[in-house]
Length: 245
Image 1 (cartoon, rainbow, N blue to C red):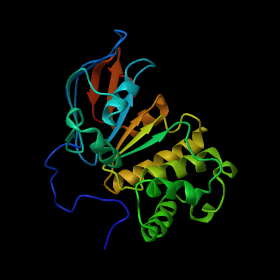
Image 2: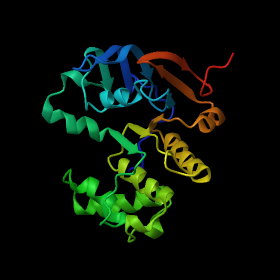
Image 3: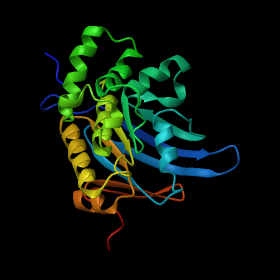
């Protein structure tokens, strides 16, 4: 029997972190330094906020994790794979281990809710039987089982983000990266999305959420990674958005 999302077995101890950055630096061809000497270890099952002002390096941090870019210094290991050592043909396999959700949803407007989630499976060659089983499971998880035949343009912003989350989970990723997932949502809807992310985390998926939403970070008191000018200035568990003295 398979579970909806993978989770560590009771009593199991993770043998390696799901994300590891060792002395990571990133300098763009134009000379801009985006990250400097970043060292981060994130164990499986963690819930982490990535915070910092615009231009602090959060987007570069995420692009390195999904191998959209390669570091110019140091080592990035994601789901047990050193991203710099992957051959081009191995990159899609890595990305199936990483679900990613964006601020702007990035849904297909001419497809239904079901078709948007199914498409992420179709492009990887999933069997029709798998799609018919998996998509309803995920729509039930995100609370959209009654909207599967609606076009995404008929949904509210919060509902569209739920579709995006369901799509991000189709391959049962080890990590869910949420890049400003509440940025376009009102406060009430934002909290609903956060509660969904907590539920997904409780099922065993590691969650990394980049955000400017101080209220959410301060209320949740989870682990916080804070970047400033490309430097990791704080890695604190049970923390607020800003350093407390």
